Picture 1 (cartoon, one colour):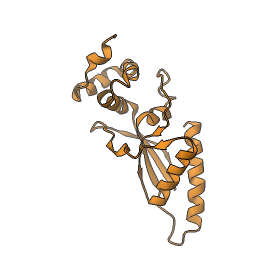
Picture 2 (picture 1 turned 60 degrees about the horizontal axis):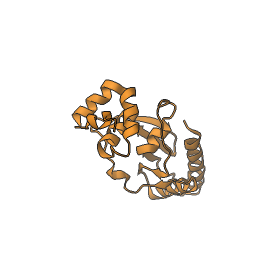
Picture 3 (picture 1 turned 180 degrees about the vertical axis):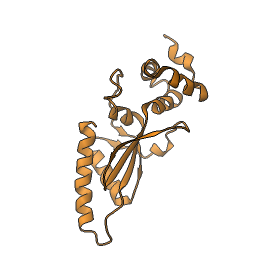
Picture 4 (picture 1 turned 90 degrees about the vertical axis):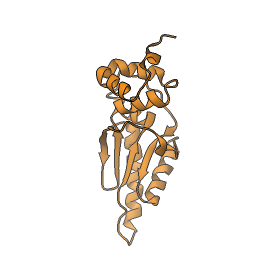
Length: 163
């Protein structure tokens, strides 16, 4: 797990622990964070060593929890120089997308789609912006990625064009 994510988790757990300790109604349920987009790929830098990933200030993700915990998480993102993308719910992913558990504690659960599904999303919905990344992914994921591209009508020729 990246030091960046460890830092966010540490701050979050500290703040929620303090919040819960003074709450008479019992502790809040854990916040579920589904990390999407470029941040999800950056979290997997160790698995995507051959990829040239560009950092972004946007944090694409879905937050599922009680409002105070969502607000704490968003505040920590701002402190870390990130902006939570309120439109994250509109990010398209393939129907068969599988998710990986990144981290889980009593305060927070973090999951993210496996990278191949994020690549399909980027290829289909933002091909121009992600052309170099998709070309790298085609070399890494080969047949599995091409099958998904075919299923979702991704224009593979666009990525093979040298212009």
